[in-house]
Structures are given as C-alpha cells and as structure tokens.
Length: 506
Image 1 (tube, one colour):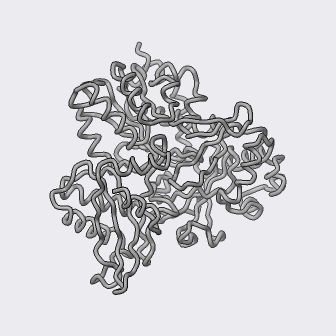
Image 2: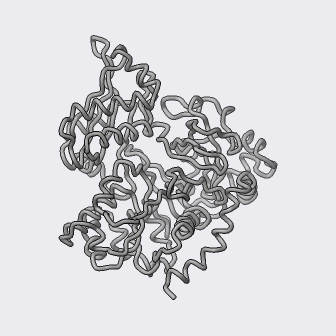
Image 3: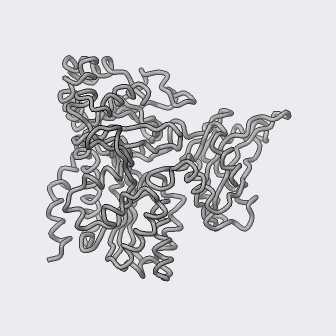
C-alpha cells in the first residue's frame, strides 16, 4: 500500500464535513461569528465594542465599525511590542508583512496561533482534501512537494516575535511531518535574497521526485526556468516525470498559463487555484472544470461584502449601510471583501474585490483590488477586464505576456487622454500595434463604461502600449527590495507613480 493510499484515509472525514458548504453555508458562517465574538469579548477591542452584549449580526454591525489598516494599526503596534489581549486573546508573536501592493508603507498583519491552525493550515489541508477527492488515482504523497516561501526578520526586540512573508511564517511553524515531504530544506526556503534562493532551490530539487509544486505563478516560473537551465532538458516532466499538480495563488494565473503549458507538456497535468492572503485563506477551486473558487465558510473567518458603488476612488467605504453579510450577496456584482478573523482583524477591508458566480454553493472569482483599477475618466477598468483583454490579444497574435501595468495619461492641451500600458513579453507579437488594437477592442467588449468613453475617440483615445525591456519589472521590484516572496506588480493604477518609475528604468 503506497503512502498516498494511506494518506487518503486521513482526509475522508474532512471531505464529508466540506459538504456543509453546499447544504448549510449560512449556518456555518453564523457559528463562526458567534465563536469569534465569544472568544474575544474580554480583549481590549472586545470591551471597547461591547462584544459581551453582541448577540447577532445586527448587533455586530452596529457595535463594530468597518476598518482599514489605519484604524487598527495602533492596536497592532501595541501587540507588536508585546501587548496582551488587544485584538485577540493572549500575545501574538507573528506578523505577516503585507505585500498586496508595492507601496513603500508596509502593513503588519497579526497571525495568531489560532489563525495559523484554523485559517491558514486549514486551507492547506482542504486544498489537498479536494484535490484527492477529484483525483482518486493521485500519487501526491509518493514524492516531494516543492513549496516556495519568503523570509522573516525579528520584530522589534520582542523575544520569539518575527515579521515576514506569510509563506515564511507558515514554513517556520509547519508540522514536522510536512517537512518530511517538502523541499527545499527550511534553511534554503527562508533565505531573503530571492536570486540566491532560486539557484539553491533548483539545485536541491533537481534530483528529487517532485510530484507537486505550490507558489505564486511568477516566482515559481522563475525557479522552474532555473531548473531547466541546470538540467538541460526541454520539458519539466523530463526532470520530474511524476509531477501532477501546481497549486497556485497570489496573482492571476491567466497571463502565465500558456508558459506553463509549454513548459509542462505531459497530459493530465493539473492546476488548482487558491485564494490565500496575508489576512487569511478564503477560497479553493473545488471543480477542475470551473475556474471560480468555493468560499471557505467554516474557518475562523466571517465575511461581509461592500458593493463597489459604496467604495470611492481611494478604496474607502463611503456608505456602510450597503455592506451585506453572505446571505445578501448577488451574482455577477463586484464587491469589496470585509473579514473578521481569529487573528484580530475586525470588519477589516482587505482591499480585494470579488464577484460571485454562484450562491448555491457560494463560488466566486477575484476581480481585482479596491485600489487596483483605472477610473480617471469614468471608465471603471478593473483587473478582471485587463486579464480578459490580454488573453484575447495573446490568443489572436500568439504572444505571451510576462508582466504588465497600466495607468492613465491625463488630458493634454487638446483634451486628449488615454491609457498607457507597459507590457513585458515572454513572446512578442509580430505587430505591437495590432496587439494594442486587439487589447483595446476586447476591453470595450467586456467593459461598457470603457466602451462609452472610447466612443469615436471623444473622451479616451486608443490605448498606448510601451514594450518593456527584459527583466524591467524584476529590476523595479529589486530596486524597492521586493524581489521574490509574495510581492506583486500593481496591475492597474489611478495615478502615474508606478508607471513613471518603470518608464524611467526602461
């Protein structure tokens, strides 16, 4: 009997429990809310917001305001200095340095022991449970798991307290049993210099029997390219013949799919998307034929949603009365996600936007960020539109996009304005202008506001495409000390700060 066969038995009970997401989703969420309030009622935040008298959701929304990081950062700083019972019972020693954007100002998201176990590790367990359920012939545990991670550093002078990438926190605290089946070794996984780490990972993993890989698509691709260079092989299955799945998350997989399919040509290779962030683990692609993800409802995360007409251009909530719990969401509507968790985040806007594709069960796609959009001229362009436009242009021209960002060019003396895109191609189109035309055409098809502003070039002129030199985006991230880990290039911006920096380096 193989190791995977034995391991499958350990996941059976959880696979049955997951049926509750289909049969009693609202009850699962009500249980989570009651648990969080009861557990935190004697914390400083719980006392200030009368958790002890909070009996239901209506009480909760009346007693607790919707928060951004700015509202919670003073509490978090006290916690980082060793304060007890502030946002969550006891002391919290781990802080995930948020890398949802490349802003110079960092956020430090508390990660409690309860949050590690009942959110982050629970998500990792369920990814495997769902994968094994969908792939009964899997040999996942008969080989090694290549898991990419970031790094961490001491937090102030508090003994045993650290800050860093969430992935580093997870690796640091992971069960010794998992370490038996993962590569690279812990020391290598936590190296801060990504270029040094990439080389060491590739060398360590080259001769291993890797059956599954996990990480952010852009950084994983960088590691795999190095593996191919060292091996001298043409396709990854020649190095790891038993590789069967890539568990990916952090950024959209759409721009990278073609690259992966060219690198891994074996039939039956699986790709499974997850939604795991510094703030929590929220969604898992439970159906290989459906790109949307199942919202995970029985972790220590209580969800609320703000429709985008209640969010201003700076990503701030302008009308809290429009916020709804899970039962109030509608399909095909953009929402900013608000969470309450056992890490001490209370009604916290994480900055991501989602759209529900189904409410029976609750399934969704990530559409972007509350600050990652262009609405300089009323066009309301979101990341989901951008991804669809790029996919269309790539399919039509045979091009492959590696990285991109876009921002508005504001009105000149002739009242002309446009969107400016910088695109780094893995495979360039024969005609850059044709690629730009196709991208612009598709954006009009998927976004009626953009189409209206583009009508007869009256408000918006055709978009401008600037071809990036090779490694431009990596060089830019490196210049900010943000190369590797979970750091991401901002896709869309309502101002020109990022794009001007990139243009100056191009």
